[in-house]
Image (cartoon, rainbow, N blue to C red; front, side, top):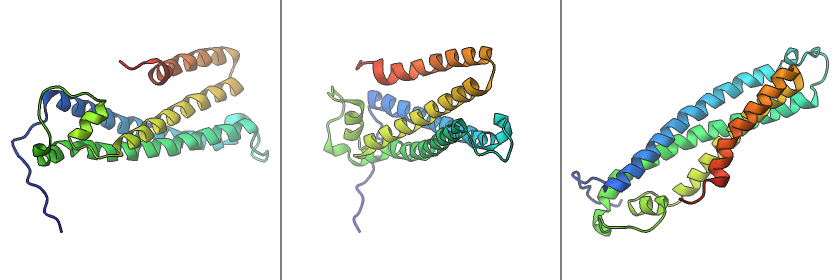
Length: 191
Protein backbone atom coordinates (compact mmCIF):
# COMPACT_ATOMS: atom_id res chain seq x y z
CA UNK A 1 0.00 0.00 0.00
CA UNK A 2 1.41 3.37 -1.00
CA UNK A 3 1.55 6.14 1.55
CA UNK A 4 -0.18 9.28 0.28
CA UNK A 5 1.78 12.50 0.08
CA UNK A 6 1.22 14.85 3.00
CA UNK A 7 -1.39 17.58 2.57
CA UNK A 8 -0.43 21.20 3.18
CA UNK A 9 -3.40 22.18 5.38
CA UNK A 10 -2.72 25.92 4.98
CA UNK A 11 -2.67 25.77 1.17
CA UNK A 12 -5.25 27.69 -0.86
CA UNK A 13 -5.79 27.61 -4.60
CA UNK A 14 -4.60 30.72 -6.46
CA UNK A 15 -7.46 33.25 -6.87
CA UNK A 16 -8.08 32.61 -10.60
CA UNK A 17 -8.05 28.83 -10.12
CA UNK A 18 -10.30 29.17 -7.07
CA UNK A 19 -12.82 31.16 -9.15
CA UNK A 20 -12.72 28.49 -11.89
CA UNK A 21 -13.23 25.79 -9.28
CA UNK A 22 -16.12 27.61 -7.59
CA UNK A 23 -17.76 28.38 -10.94
CA UNK A 24 -17.73 24.75 -12.01
CA UNK A 25 -18.95 23.58 -8.59
CA UNK A 26 -21.94 25.93 -8.81
CA UNK A 27 -22.69 24.89 -12.38
CA UNK A 28 -22.52 21.19 -11.56
CA UNK A 29 -24.68 21.50 -8.46
CA UNK A 30 -27.29 23.50 -10.38
CA UNK A 31 -27.08 20.97 -13.20
CA UNK A 32 -27.84 18.11 -10.82
CA UNK A 33 -30.96 19.90 -9.61
CA UNK A 34 -32.15 20.84 -13.11
CA UNK A 35 -31.57 17.39 -14.60
CA UNK A 36 -33.35 15.69 -11.67
CA UNK A 37 -36.34 18.01 -12.18
CA UNK A 38 -36.36 17.14 -15.89
CA UNK A 39 -36.31 13.43 -14.94
CA UNK A 40 -39.35 13.95 -12.71
CA UNK A 41 -41.19 15.81 -15.46
CA UNK A 42 -40.37 13.07 -17.96
CA UNK A 43 -41.66 10.36 -15.63
CA UNK A 44 -44.97 12.22 -15.41
CA UNK A 45 -45.06 12.77 -19.18
CA UNK A 46 -44.60 9.02 -19.75
CA UNK A 47 -47.77 8.37 -17.77
CA UNK A 48 -49.58 11.11 -19.69
CA UNK A 49 -48.39 9.96 -23.13
CA UNK A 50 -49.21 6.31 -22.35
CA UNK A 51 -52.79 7.26 -21.55
CA UNK A 52 -54.73 6.99 -24.79
CA UNK A 53 -57.27 9.40 -23.36
CA UNK A 54 -54.61 12.10 -23.70
CA UNK A 55 -54.86 11.60 -27.46
CA UNK A 56 -58.64 11.19 -27.62
CA UNK A 57 -58.45 7.58 -28.79
CA UNK A 58 -60.20 4.51 -27.33
CA UNK A 59 -58.16 2.15 -25.16
CA UNK A 60 -58.64 -0.63 -27.71
CA UNK A 61 -56.86 1.25 -30.53
CA UNK A 62 -53.14 0.67 -31.04
CA UNK A 63 -50.89 3.64 -30.23
CA UNK A 64 -50.62 6.20 -33.02
CA UNK A 65 -47.29 7.04 -34.66
CA UNK A 66 -47.29 10.39 -32.85
CA UNK A 67 -47.87 8.68 -29.51
CA UNK A 68 -44.94 6.31 -30.17
CA UNK A 69 -42.68 9.21 -31.22
CA UNK A 70 -43.60 11.13 -28.07
CA UNK A 71 -42.92 8.08 -25.90
CA UNK A 72 -39.52 7.57 -27.55
CA UNK A 73 -38.56 11.23 -27.06
CA UNK A 74 -39.71 11.04 -23.46
CA UNK A 75 -37.75 7.85 -22.75
CA UNK A 76 -34.64 9.42 -24.30
CA UNK A 77 -35.10 12.55 -22.17
CA UNK A 78 -35.66 10.44 -19.04
CA UNK A 79 -32.54 8.32 -19.55
CA UNK A 80 -30.40 11.34 -20.47
CA UNK A 81 -31.62 13.41 -17.52
CA UNK A 82 -30.96 10.58 -15.05
CA UNK A 83 -27.51 10.14 -16.62
CA UNK A 84 -26.88 13.90 -16.37
CA UNK A 85 -27.91 13.90 -12.71
CA UNK A 86 -25.55 11.07 -11.77
CA UNK A 87 -22.73 12.47 -13.92
CA UNK A 88 -23.17 15.88 -12.33
CA UNK A 89 -22.90 14.36 -8.86
CA UNK A 90 -19.75 12.44 -9.85
CA UNK A 91 -18.19 15.57 -11.34
CA UNK A 92 -19.12 17.61 -8.26
CA UNK A 93 -17.20 15.09 -6.18
CA UNK A 94 -14.27 15.20 -8.62
CA UNK A 95 -14.11 19.00 -8.62
CA UNK A 96 -14.56 19.03 -4.85
CA UNK A 97 -11.32 17.08 -4.44
CA UNK A 98 -9.21 19.59 -6.43
CA UNK A 99 -8.09 21.67 -3.41
CA UNK A 100 -6.94 18.61 -1.45
CA UNK A 101 -5.21 16.97 -4.40
CA UNK A 102 -3.61 20.28 -5.29
CA UNK A 103 -2.33 20.68 -1.73
CA UNK A 104 -0.71 17.22 -2.03
CA UNK A 105 1.02 18.05 -5.32
CA UNK A 106 1.99 21.60 -4.51
CA UNK A 107 5.73 21.01 -4.77
CA UNK A 108 5.40 19.67 -8.32
CA UNK A 109 4.34 22.98 -9.90
CA UNK A 110 5.07 26.67 -9.75
CA UNK A 111 2.41 28.74 -8.03
CA UNK A 112 1.26 32.13 -9.28
CA UNK A 113 2.31 34.00 -12.38
CA UNK A 114 0.71 33.42 -15.74
CA UNK A 115 -0.49 30.17 -17.24
CA UNK A 116 -1.44 29.52 -20.86
CA UNK A 117 -4.14 26.97 -21.52
CA UNK A 118 -7.81 26.15 -21.40
CA UNK A 119 -9.82 26.02 -18.20
CA UNK A 120 -9.33 22.26 -18.14
CA UNK A 121 -5.58 22.54 -18.72
CA UNK A 122 -5.36 24.91 -15.77
CA UNK A 123 -7.53 22.71 -13.56
CA UNK A 124 -5.55 19.60 -14.57
CA UNK A 125 -2.35 21.30 -13.45
CA UNK A 126 -4.06 21.71 -10.07
CA UNK A 127 -4.93 17.99 -10.00
CA UNK A 128 -8.24 17.59 -11.80
CA UNK A 129 -8.03 14.01 -13.04
CA UNK A 130 -7.48 13.28 -16.71
CA UNK A 131 -10.68 12.22 -18.43
CA UNK A 132 -12.80 14.68 -16.45
CA UNK A 133 -13.19 16.83 -19.56
CA UNK A 134 -14.70 13.90 -21.48
CA UNK A 135 -17.08 13.22 -18.59
CA UNK A 136 -17.99 16.93 -18.61
CA UNK A 137 -18.85 16.75 -22.32
CA UNK A 138 -20.96 13.66 -21.62
CA UNK A 139 -22.81 15.62 -18.93
CA UNK A 140 -23.40 18.59 -21.25
CA UNK A 141 -24.55 16.30 -24.07
CA UNK A 142 -26.93 14.41 -21.75
CA UNK A 143 -28.55 17.52 -20.31
CA UNK A 144 -28.79 19.10 -23.78
CA UNK A 145 -30.48 16.03 -25.29
CA UNK A 146 -32.87 15.74 -22.31
CA UNK A 147 -33.82 19.40 -22.61
CA UNK A 148 -34.30 19.31 -26.38
CA UNK A 149 -36.36 16.10 -26.26
CA UNK A 150 -38.61 17.62 -23.59
CA UNK A 151 -39.15 20.80 -25.60
CA UNK A 152 -39.69 18.93 -28.88
CA UNK A 153 -42.10 16.36 -27.43
CA UNK A 154 -44.18 19.10 -25.83
CA UNK A 155 -44.29 21.04 -29.09
CA UNK A 156 -45.26 17.94 -31.09
CA UNK A 157 -48.07 17.11 -28.67
CA UNK A 158 -49.48 20.64 -28.82
CA UNK A 159 -49.17 20.82 -32.63
CA UNK A 160 -50.96 17.48 -33.05
CA UNK A 161 -53.62 17.78 -30.34
CA UNK A 162 -54.43 21.40 -29.57
CA UNK A 163 -56.22 24.29 -31.36
CA UNK A 164 -54.43 26.51 -33.88
CA UNK A 165 -53.86 29.37 -31.43
CA UNK A 166 -52.05 27.04 -29.03
CA UNK A 167 -50.05 25.58 -31.92
CA UNK A 168 -48.83 29.02 -33.04
CA UNK A 169 -47.97 30.17 -29.52
CA UNK A 170 -46.17 26.97 -28.53
CA UNK A 171 -44.26 26.82 -31.83
CA UNK A 172 -43.08 30.41 -31.29
CA UNK A 173 -42.11 29.71 -27.68
CA UNK A 174 -40.32 26.51 -28.74
CA UNK A 175 -38.21 28.39 -31.27
CA UNK A 176 -37.42 31.11 -28.73
CA UNK A 177 -36.53 28.56 -26.04
CA UNK A 178 -34.10 26.72 -28.32
CA UNK A 179 -32.25 29.88 -29.47
CA UNK A 180 -30.08 30.25 -26.32
CA UNK A 181 -29.09 26.59 -26.56
CA UNK A 182 -28.11 27.03 -30.20
CA UNK A 183 -26.20 30.22 -29.40
CA UNK A 184 -24.32 28.54 -26.56
CA UNK A 185 -23.25 25.49 -28.56
CA UNK A 186 -22.96 26.91 -32.07
CA UNK A 187 -22.38 30.63 -31.94
CA UNK A 188 -20.77 31.67 -28.69
CA UNK A 189 -17.26 31.63 -30.16
CA UNK A 190 -14.01 31.22 -28.30
CA UNK A 191 -13.76 34.29 -26.10
